[in-house]
Image (cartoon, rainbow, N blue to C red; front, side, top):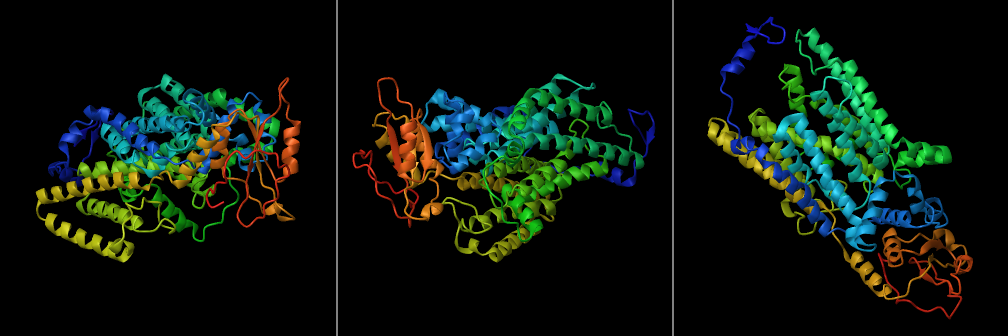
Length: 615
């Protein structure tokens, strides 16, 4: 019998609990690291800034990043925002008109500070937001599991390819994830530290949620839904504990008060940032809502042949190679709740389950499986990858602290290593492949999945036989496997991010030649074609448009399909007093389409023809 200090009533301890108390706990794998977790706090800053800086140093300009750069240039234009977007006839840029504006504003500010046309100006906002997101992930994981969980979370998340790619491009991915994490951290800190309905932690969480509304749009609604679902699970869990005779209050106040706190969180966010949604909704109606919920450019996606399997494989690829560790971590959370062993100081880990469910549904619904490069898919994928990485960090902590069984830990570590080997052996165009660097792509036996499975099984059998009867050998084998998994995760993240290619050098050479020319007021992309071929003309890549727009940032650009339309636009331009209007024409001719003749032989050639992306 034992006395519960909270109820002063005797509490029965069964034989199973007595056996667990008598058995000496297994020694942790890295006791020095576990004891010095708080002293390793400076390492968090290093992990937050250095890997992302390495990714930014070799980043390439993507289509979506160039579109975001064009939107930021329009934000710097002295012309009204609606007028600056109208009339370009560049459909992909027009589709960004109603996206949440915070990333556009931040990128525009960095372009203003660091200089238009400089790579640092375009990527500075994304880099800083990604590094801050990693720090926010540490703060949240620390609330859910202490210093150790926070340290391991940042160690795994800092080398996730999706996170590193978010530092390369100025898309809403990182800034939406940053403020979503701060919102979760604020309300969980409020639940853990305050006994009232409101507190300054809740206020900071509400402000973060409002900024998330300006940064990610529907992502903020997902945060509110996740918090509400967690409160519901919290209440159901309390009822289940009462039926089992376990009297344990999960917080200093009831679930009803917790729900009211969630309402205050949402109300604070709407009071801060709801004006933007209401303003555009009143002016544009359904046109705004359809674009706002889409969060991105992109058309309808092909449905997956096997949605369940496709979703499982998509989740798998988001957190490669530590997906197996995420399963161990989620299993540990369920085990703690089932046995009533959860540390009262580390509550609310169950929020990972509604978080994963809501983010997975949103990611799958927006076509994330088939449109991985769309900003909407990347924003939802980031929101989904973060709880999976936190769960993987929890699984790694379980193995390091020897709370997971030897067989389970062995299987999880070998599965992680086999995952990395298999996906690294596949070509980039394979459905299961990733765009690894050529030097990092494995070949030979790793091209065969059966060979990888055979090697993993043989290795597991050898390690199991070695450590079955000897505790010190078992501990050494697990330590080696854990270190191998962490190093493999770092290698995977560094190898899988995209790097600059020859098209970036082609654009740099083109910009260098055009920068010597005088400034122009109009920039027109002309695709002159003959006959009925105009419908087959594709618009120029955003990378090319952005690069030329940064040469003459004050010029207004447009896309036309004939020389007549281009001349009409120039003739309508207002010339300065006592001067003339200068214009630059970029003749864009896709392959297989006949180019029309230049109507005016007096036009001066600004540069030689350039072949870009095969066009």
